[in-house]
Image (tube, rainbow, N blue to C red; front, side, top):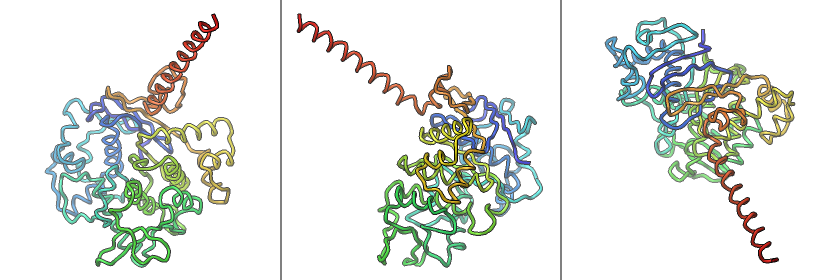
Length: 394
C-alpha cells in the first residue's frame, strides 16, 4: 500500500514533521529546512525495492550499514542526517527502522517518479546525461531522473525529432500556454548534426536550430521538466506510465514567469486527472495562489468556468476535464520552519493567528510588509500635507 502519512523526527534539519498527504501536497518554507530530505525519504519509503534493484545493477554493496545507504542514496556527506537513538520514522502510524529499507525486499517496479530541483544538470550542452557508473556524490533521484530522460529521447523519440509541440501528450490549451509563455515562436526538437541527439530550439523553415547555451534561463530550466511530464504522459490509451502512482516535483517555478508557472500548474492538474498523486515543493506564492483559489472554489461550489478563468484557457472537452479535477481533489500544504518544526497550513487562511499560515509559509510576508510600509508612508504624507495646507490658510 502507498503511504497516506509519514512522520519523522530529528532527520536532517527537521525536528518534527507529521505530513498527511492529499491528492496534491505542497511543501513550502525557506531553503535548507528539510523539504528535499523529506521528499527523498518519501521516495525511499515508497520505492525501496526498485532503489535496491538499481544498486544491484551497478554492483553496489552498502554492507548492511545505514551510513553507507544514506551516502549512496542522498549523496556524499549526507549520512549525518540520521542520528542513532534520536531520529525516527513512522509510516501510517507504524514505527519503522530505516535499516529495513536496506534489507532484501521483494522486487517491485518503481511507484514514484521524482523530478529533482537540480534537473537542469540532467542536460549538458543540450545532451541528455546517461550515468554509466554510480558515484555516491550523485543523489539517487538526480541520477534516476537523468536516466529516464535519456531513455525517453533515445527510444520513444528515436524516430520523431519534434519534441514540442507534441499533440499526442499535451492538450491543445496546454500547448498554447507553453508556446505563449515559454517557447514563443520556437519549437523544440533533437538534432543529430554532431552524431548525438542534441536539443535545439527551431523556427519553422529554419534548418539550423538554436543550441542549448543561447536559450533563455527559463527555457533551460523548463525543458527537463517538460520531458519529465512527457515521461508521465505516455501517448497511448493508458493515462499513466507503467506502475507509477506518485510524482514529486521540486521547485517547478524555477526560472519561470508567473504566466508560465500557471501553465505548469495546469499540467499538474493533468497529472492529477490521470490518477497520479503529486507532491510539490515551492518558493512561489503563485503556486499557493492557485491552490488557495481551487480550495475556495471547491468549498463555495465554484464552477468549471471559474477554474478555466483562473488559467485563462478556452473551454473544450480536455480543459473541462482538468477543471473538474481541480474541483474534486484534496489539497494539503505544509510549512517547514527554520526551527525544524513542520506545520499544517492547508487552510491558507490570511486571517489566521499563526503567522506561518497567514503569510502562506512566508511567501506573502515580504509583499505584505511592503504594502504595510507603503500604506504608513502614504498616511503620514497625507497627514503632513494636510497640516501644511492648514498652516498656509492661517
